[in-house]
Each structure stands twice: as structure tokens, then as C-alpha cells.
View (tube, rainbow, N blue to C red):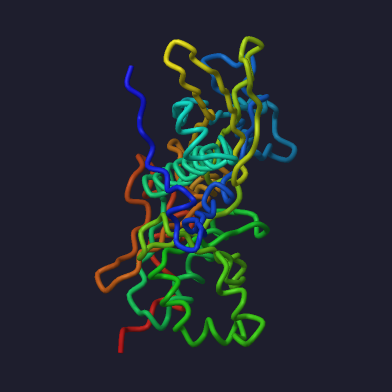
Length: 354
């Protein structure tokens, strides 16, 4: 067995005997996901839990004073389920010799190494959450061409979420860094935010304010020219710490950036090596919903055959960005026509770039 010789800067060789830490990554995207804990999965078949989507039932008319030749119609009630699977283990495993422990890390021991192990896992979970977001399915994608009129497109995203009957409370606009910069230069945004001494401090944080019913949050992990208008429940993240086995010499559970993790530590006397393992379980899914709409012929409330990404709207910024309404789905034409979502309303058309 070969043990990695960690590159540790000894205090005596550090300038002025000071150390500095890397800028800490702030967990952003998982905080806007709906979180599910471990207890939901205990005893679940295939380590999967299901979110139940309630069914709908139509109403019918029975002719007044009819001859009763035909019975009243009997309807069938059907629910759907959205599976969430706890499907991966994220871990960090490091080993340390007695010499490294005693002469390199000295009094800090495992403290410094453990902090970096936990930080690496939380960073990975954050980046993985961003990938789930970027690879999601969106019934509607909006293009923002005019850098000085971004709020027009944000308002259009609000309009779409409203059409899909999403709740007003808890909406988030997750923006990339370029999108954030353009917002800061948008005169309407600055007017709404009333940027001043108090607002400037808020801009330095990930949450840069609230506008058009959205909490605006900046993320470095999504493409810089994208934004996502999210309603509650658009994405689900399942996350938990495995249990500490009774046979483990030392161990425990802790949290880093809101993620639950397990720490196990053991010593191998054959190689005079101390070992630390930090791990966590996680799983992700996007919630795709059937769409309820009024059929133009029967005037009944019907449910779409396919499921669509209606709890989130993707926004792309750039001179070539375009709108896309219901690009996929077997019954997309009927759904988009019934909802009136085949294009933006004229009032929300983006002004031409000057």
C-alpha cells in the first residue's frame, strides 16, 4: 500500500506564520430545491419514494326532466406518482501517516483535513444540483435579447408560472453571473430595488433582492447567461447521512452547508496509517406534472397525456436567444392552445435592442 504524501505547508515556513483559507463556496442551488430526508426511504421498495399527484374528476350535465333512458355517467379517478430515488454515495477518503499527523498538522490533527473533506462533498453536491437544473425539461424557455429590458422577460416568466397555476409564495429567480451583471445595469431593476447604501450591502450577498414576486439569487454554478424562474417543488433533492456502524472505532454525523454527512475514522497498525472517510447519500429529480386545462369542445377540465416541466421557466440571455413554447409532448398543441401559451402576450414582448 502506498500512502499519499499530502502537501501541507508547515507553520514555520508560512509567511509571518499566518495561513489563509480559500474563499468558501456557499451552497445555493440545493437550498431552492425541495429537500427530502432519509426517513422517507426506510423500507421503500428499490430505495424509491413517490410524490403523489392528485387526480381530477369532470362534471357532467343531466337533462332537466329527461326520460331517464340513459344513466348518469360514471367516471374513473386516477392519481399519478413521481418517483424520487436515493441513488448515489458521495465520499472523501484520505489517509495520514503518524509523521504527517505529528510533524505536519501538529496540534490541528484531523481538524483541518476533516473540514476540507466535508467542504469537498458539499461542493460536489452543489455542483451536481446545478447539473440537474441545467439538464431539466422546461415546457417554456424565454429568450432575453435586450440587456436593458431584462425585467420584461422576468415578467413574462411570472406570467407563464401564473398560467400554470403555480403558487405565488416561495418563487425564486436563480441567475448566472452575467445575468446578474445585466440586472444591475437595468434601470428598471435599480429603480425597483432603490439601490442605496442599504441595498448595496445586499447586492454583495447571493440574494440580491426581490422583484416581480421572485427572490433573486445569484449562482456561480449555472451558465452565466442563464436564469431559472422556479416555483416551489420544481426540483427535489433527497439527502442523508448513513448511520455510524457499531463496529466503527470512531465516528459521528455532522452537517456542512446544510448537508448531512457521516465521518468514520480508523487506524491500520500494519501500515501505521490513520484513515478518515466522510460520506453522504443523495438523489435528485425534477417534478414533471400533467397539465389540467379546459377542453374547447367538451368544456370539461381534462388532464394532459404527457407530463411537463411547468414549475420552472428557463431564461437564456443573449442576442440569439429565442422563446420556445411546448417544444415536446404528444398533446403539446392542445395544451398550449388551451392555456394560451404559444407565444408571449404582446404587452410582454421584449423591446428591440437599441
